[in-house]
Image (cartoon, rainbow, N blue to C red; front, side):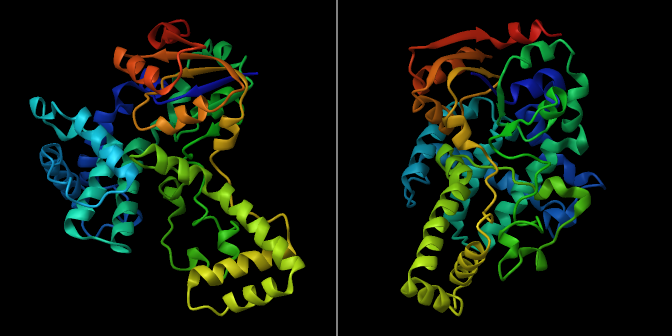
Amino acid sequence: MKSLLVGNGINIQYGSSRCSNKEIVKRAITSPDDPDFPLDAITLTDRHQAVWLIGSLYSEIPNIIRGDFDKYYLASFEETALTSFKERYSTFEQQPSPLNVGLEDYFFVLELFFKKNNVHNPDAHAIRETFKRTFSCSIYDSGYLESLHLRYPRKLKSFLDPFDEIFTTNYDSNLDVFSERSVVHLHGCFKTLSYLYDENSFRNQLGDNQLDAAFFDPEKAYLFSNVIFSYSGSLKEFQMKQATRTNAALEKFVDGYKNRADVRKEVAAWQEDESRIMRNLASSIAKKAANPSLKFEEYYGAERLQSISDTLAIVGLSPNNDTHIFDFLKSNDKLRYITYYYHSQGDIDSVRKLLPKDGLSFADVRSLWGKYE
């Protein structure tokens, strides 16, 4: 079996620097000046709040490097992220610019900003969603991103066709359209609605349909998609596997509900519980017991990536912020050979740390793309 994993490098190759981190951050800063900025969908009371927030986060970077945030309580994955952040931005003051900050690193600084200013849910959640949609708008680039397949040379098909399965960390559907195949979107896709906004989702068949209270603009559906934004590989992994784990737990609840009177009595009590979470759990158990085909949507295909065999080619994927992907591969004993097409020596050094050297080869991604122009 031959598998392919594609990252943002393909978008930069065929979409130019408009798909680079610098340009994405630049659009996030300047797009509120556009009269077509989706203000209602991004839920800002002022179209320049996103600019203010990015500026505020940027101003904290020297303080983070200096260690001012070390005093706050951090979970283990946050400590790991903080150490990595300090290492990667240790020379930041030599070329300071908000455009030189990684998109996902802004999401980490946002969490530190919450700790410093004592911001908690539901306010923190609302700000995260605003930030996520601001950057989604910037990445989508008024639809330019989804048009890149028109720039792909036909010869590229000869590279894609031999692969049995294609995975991507990208949010766009260009590979799907161009290859005329179903591509696994590990971090979600702009064309797939989040279960919160899908009227047919299992979640919205429970007692408190989220669509009843949520704002949704079908003309800007990509802003309500299932795409994952996170600074941490472990957080991305959690989101990728959450539905699968929830469905497995729900199966066990349903088995008890069907076969034990005490469990049925307990579930009946949960239906009257003050907690919305408990009421929804009771509802999900009862509905799945009546209709076993119901389940929470498993979008991301983490298990499919972990189960691939034989050979894998990785193209245009930077190892930064996606260590969970390499952890999946490292734990897969069915993979015999991995070819990693790289952009820079730094990528090679990072991948050597993340993957065992046995069975790993390297090639220059620029040479690869050159064959298919």
